[in-house]
Image 1 (cartoon, rainbow, N blue to C red):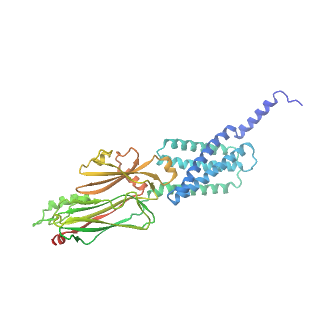
Image 2: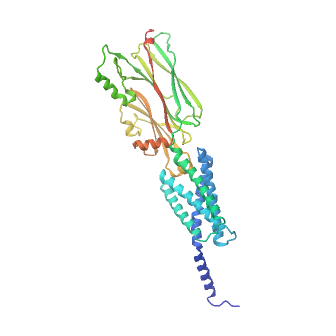
Image 3: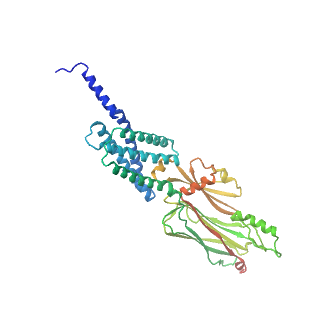
Length: 433
């Protein structure tokens, strides 16, 4: 029996009308797959990295969740094909809907993180497109009259699982970076002076001890130990009240504050010795102790009446960042590219160390531009100190605001452990000549 003329065209037209009325057009299916498959690839890639390399337990959980959502997106893509073409599985529409909803939530959270701390325009655009596309995919799948058995139970399960995932994401990326946490302790113990055989010089052994009583390790960005020699002049008469007031005004600067004394006349100390006491880039593990000893040597006829000892350690939490080896890459006196704000105090010389910083999770590592930690070890006649910053390459000259500096320190768990001044008089030693 022959097919009437035009019958084939009519059947194709009727099929197209049925497809359009049910919302299951081939173009829509292709676009949904174009959203779900890249989402699955991206989430799976970052999830595998986090599961194996994240620096915190919650980061590993985030990695497992990303892998799970990646699998749901792949399963949802397969269900979309079945729901559009075969309908061999009665609940393929529901699976497709779950996959698109999971992709939407994951993409929305990635978009939030990309705009909150990310620098990459590529990932901001990609996450924006995937979020918008997955929202459209949820709406499109929902329009196809999806059959959902026990809809209340399914909705409750989705709400609970989504809530847990969002809570973990919020803890890992919002709450946890705002917690400063533990701070190791630094102690100084000055030993007994030892005279040389000719009784013309003496040595003071100084033990420096750092104790980490917390459950987390710390990278050592830099350490400094310095000794100041001080002269003590005493007035025969009580000092005037206006002199006391002038002394009190120096309290805003701890390093040079004058003592409030009726008799003692303040004189600035002078640097006797300054040096690091732990190699930069080393680390101290949780519940660990590190001890070292330095020796301060002076002639017996030293003009100083007392010595003041200081020690500090600038640290970064190992659960907040990964750190490449810190290397010295410049000096303020040899024409190196040292920031202008470092050179402002001409009385200080500076040794600059630098190293690459890695974020503690895959999401931030990919969406943020590379960061570098720069440590400035400064010393001069009036003391020694450390300053550090973590910035993008080429931003070393940028002066951070107080809020930006605080945010940087909190994000990377930067802490300073210090002690001093520990003072010791020399009169008894000098009298042994």
